Image (cartoon, rainbow, N blue to C red; front, side):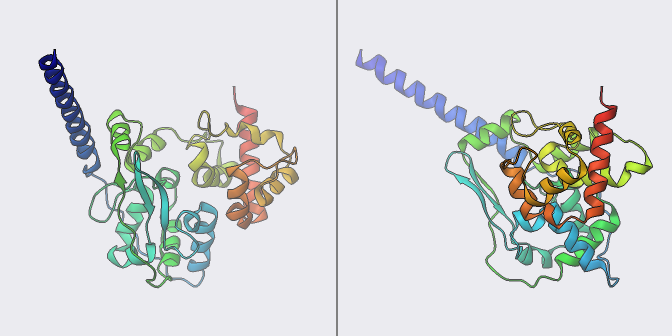
Length: 279
């Protein structure tokens, strides 16, 4: 009996080792992948208003939310099973990137060395124009190097299993999905609102603005707000019912409160028209 138990334990350990090797090796192939991504020809804008425009885009888009106001990054998530993800200290990273490499990282989720970024929401900015990216780069480069370097992401066993099963994806994979599923185009009169909704709201509500099941709603819900109510939500995080709405309220106060009245009105007009034309 003891002999059978011993061989059973040996077989079990062997299966665990094989499973670990498959998960580690398979996930490592995905982690080390280097997608063929075109390098854009973009240089930082240099006109007098560039930095202010870039700061505006960076604020409403949440660049200085994830990377902190000083752009020095932080620990974004950490647990021994899933791993640790840091937001980069951009002030330390920027000197090692050309403007074109930085533009590619922003819109495609690819580092200067060609490796993929993780948890960087580039899928939100795939429609950001060259001019907007040039302004953002101009703003980013005004920050002198300071603070500690942030390590690259480290994946735990559960995190690696999720990667192998496709439940966790590198940023370029999310970018490809976003490009294949844009928000409804309602014509030139709603172009500004659509653009803002995709590049700002899309991070949580997806590029098509249909929401993330179990996390965020389809933005058809915006049609239930009149413009004053929508403006209040965007500036204070307080909804029509007078209640806080979790992450939306936090993001509204930290980032969306910087929106101009004109841009809030443009977003509202587009989202309302989108709801009216929905099946």
